[in-house]
Length: 290
Length: 195
Picture 1 (cartoon, rainbow over the protein chains, first blue to last red):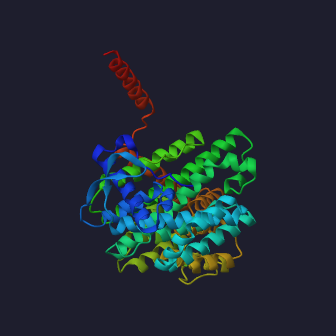
Picture 2: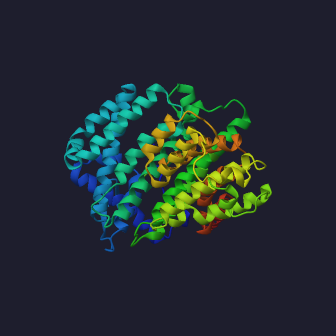
Picture 3: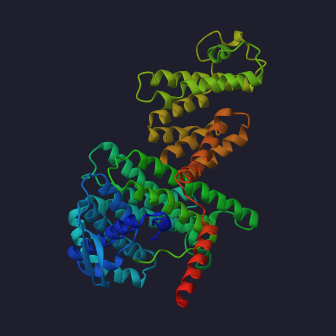
């Protein structure tokens, strides 16, 4: 599910790439400082977009420094110091990671889920205190998702709704966006990113789910002949691009004050590249850590 | 119901093509999207409703829709179903999605318009897969309806529009280019080893 939201690296300027990595490391440091070193393992790229967008709402330039990091001991790296956007994105990523384990545990009673929930339970307590409403709403949606999966709902939109709702909650950061319009745009971005991740993941996992019998709304579509498969692919493409189109139009209404080209690299190039990769090959390797 | 020809601003006995053209023009003029945040909004909404009805009446039965049948100016029993759907349309335009959904579920007729409106509702909810399926059904039930076809085209355009936007910003399908780049890189690397 994770690691789909990445920039289109060849089209980034070197300085943008450095700053992007700086945000990534900044989020990692922020987690390490506030929650513990083990928690840093849950780091992924998806959160960088959130941090970038939130930080772009303020005119203030990032404070950067060169620091060493235990993961890469040899070379000093550019790190963006903590700001409210980074801190929030880090919190949300940890929250998502916890609930991913929570969901795994609920699904199959998987060992990984159990271990994950236990390992992150301390951090979750802290987060629960900081964002009680968000936690409750996310849990509600996960329960709804679980129910839908159990009853085997065949509508793609219905199946994707809880996860899209979760991402909407994740993106709904009200303190940093000065206006109601910004808040609305952020929620819309979150909702559509959620739908996009859900569908791209479902399409990516289709063959695996077919073999193992896991739930996947796309398994309800007719897929006997090559023609039908082609049709399904076109339908998936229509939906994925529709989400991105709506996401982009929400982005255009946001008061972005800095890093525009970098964020647009992700929104217009990175997400499209990923979409095409998944549609073409069926499977892709997700990005590895920097 | 008013004289549909008058509503669309055409002569009685106009051909189907003329009716379609006039309808298109009127819809463009009164589309609620053009009057958002503007005092004319509700008026435009009402007007659009009239236009849709007039168009429907004429397309269904162009020969019979002579002015005489419509002079009364009041609703001449267009059936409970259509009445409810008009309400649904209003709810959707005003963004009251829950009411629209309840009303749709309550309506017993499942005609092309019902599917079209379900599609519009799904669209507003962000359920684009449902939306296009419903509108597709509406189109196949009533292939001549311009409104349904128009809605479907605009959905397809929204979806493909993103790729166009990305292209305008310089997105390139770099499969070939990347291969070439990698080749050059390998050659250059090999050269370095020589020295």
